[in-house]
Figure 1 (spheres, rainbow, N blue to C red):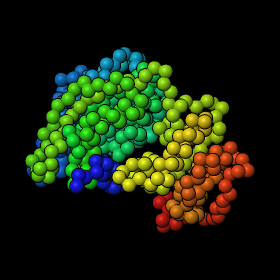
Figure 2 (cartoon, helix red, strand yellow):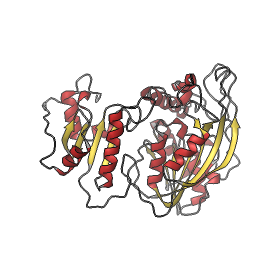
Figure 3 (cartoon, one colour):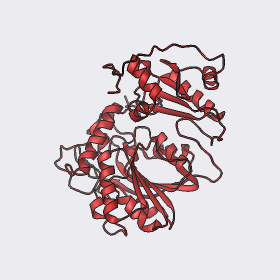
Figure 4 (tube, helix red, strand yellow):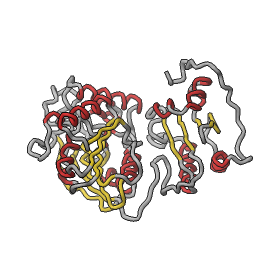
Length: 406
């Protein structure tokens, strides 16, 4: 039987493996798994991506070159002086510094990475270079910490293959781009479907292999995010170590650099479900706090709960009506849970079984289930039709063992 192309390792294990791998690289304790260095013996799960040489590129900074790339996205991005550029998965800052060479002092370069050790190293590099207009933030590229329509160009180098929810990541890139702006990403794709034994390996996911989508599927994800003019501007094969893939498995890997444009005249809210820009007078913000799930909405993988599909559609409809919707997954965004006192209080009292929690105006309005579309509208607007619920609150500040908050 042909393995399902959506088979992924457990999301928590995947993210822990990726973070641990790249934290070790940032600390200098491990070789890169996507670069041009020698990655070890034939039995190692490290992968030599034979990244394009950067040392001849203007703006190259040796201290930031951890051999993590699989292309030269900045060279194909068509940057100009004064632009604002965002680098997704910035690592130690190499692509950001190359971009800064083009945008100059009048421009701004932003980098985001979800490994704190990488962010710290990139900041040290920027300080050593005296680049006041290059900033690095700790964050998740599936939920970017930047406002809508504030970036001219988004670049990324061998990172999106590491993201469980690639559709969400491209939707976020679309959101932060100004209309007419564009993305230019270098990434790893496959020619065909990778074997289940490969896709289920968290180590190979961290090694830039298991998360590779089929080439045409990948380009389809970019188009589905709303981008136009999707074009492969560079492409080359990648040599895998002998014995990495099971015998008879035919799914060669490619390094591709893809450029695509956000059309002029488009508007999009946060990728949590909003599809249109929201007016300043919109209804109060609805915040959804989900239990740990395989991706940002739970609508991913081979076995999707129909209730989650329906709830995602209901949230999108609510957002289209002018309601600001924000959604957080405990497995991916625990800081968002800690930042909301009502959520902390509820989880401290009941534990994580209280999730999902819906909060409006700092008040919990629903817990333990996903309301219907009509119930959502009533909850947001505070009408008499809103479903009644009770939540016992304890004065204790101690987290129960299963709360996940301590």
